Length: 607
Image 1 (cartoon, rainbow, N blue to C red):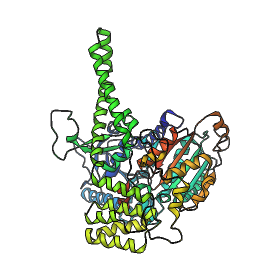
Image 2: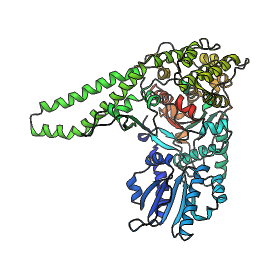
Image 3: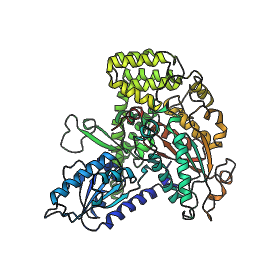
């Protein structure tokens, strides 16, 4: 889906963030030094260019890891020192130390102003920390920069918060849910109040309650905007803990599994790509590659099962070669000019083909290993319910061979989810084996996963949950055409994510159609109709009913799906596939973070 070309243009959200940031900078008259929390460098780069900051008198930018604040010199005088940071206590410690050192050095005679921009929101705990350190009076402004959701593509938004599950599920710290609710309120301020909300899970219920409270507080002051988004689906990650641990089999999913995509970019070995200059790369050098739908070839490949990628690359390579051959048939000056005018586009296409062919080759090498093939077979057997109540021979062999710990923990988590918990003797056997081979650090990871519910002990009264869901939701399909699929199960070559099956069902007829399955999953399922502001009419008289006027008129609905706890690229691909599959709904996907099995496990560790 290309949301920017349809009713909901997510670029408006980016424009709002840019306006907020630029307005703050412009209100601080004079030269500025911007000091970054390193984790925000790439997120802010998605919103604005370096040159746009310079145009607003940002003379230099520094990392928060600097030892001292930049001094004024004959060449550079800083009227303002602006910290752009996450609202974290350890960051406040660092800022307080920098301010205290500067105060001692200048003997309290500094004539410049200090400011903090908290992204995405100011924290009372952070302000208290600054007060306790005796530096809060040094700041002219302590403000929120409310860029809660970063637009990663025309249909994809992310909070870029990897600690969401650890905070909410493990530590019972629900403060980040306020940021989720705020992000939805921001979207509603741009695109209108979303008429109907569906939620499933404890965190989703809390977010819905916060939203309702915020709307009551805004009563009478909401923008009069006709709704552009019809439905909101809030979905806890804990509703489907199986899917993230499975190996993603889409092109973009594989890229994330191997290279770990970070805000639309990856780093690949430089020696695997053609050199663009005379200087050769050194061993260990990497090259950054950006992955977005602006690259037409990547946009075509990203949601395909990997087995469908090769034929597309081959076809596109032949097409570009044919275009280059046209120069040999150009006989007139006009024909030559036309060919030359097409060269930039052709060269860009050729570069994209080269880059994606290289990536596809590295994926091919990865999946050709015995470790991957045997691991995938084990996953397929577990998700089909084979021997899930016993010590898995393959997992045991992996431990003996000292295979990567994340691979083993993912397999144990898959077995736990498919067995609705491990029998005590099975879990104890895995723990003992892991300690003997990997040491006690492996048990720290395993305990984190137990605390989050990724791995659990079996409850004899609920040991048929997964098998029932597998049947009711048609999760496992035997015959899948990976090159020309007819079901979302193609993204895992025969497994349909529970999360997307739920979304598929609710988009057609609400929660009631799958009430028996919902009862087997954690958290309450809620449907809420939001009252529109006075004077605002529903978009051409409809909200959600499949028999509504809009459906009869053939107009597609727009549904915002918000994953609380993370979403995989394979699930994103499955939702995009639904839009093509004679489904009268366009999806916008928002998430606390984009995850895979490895990063999901790592997210449980404290910084």
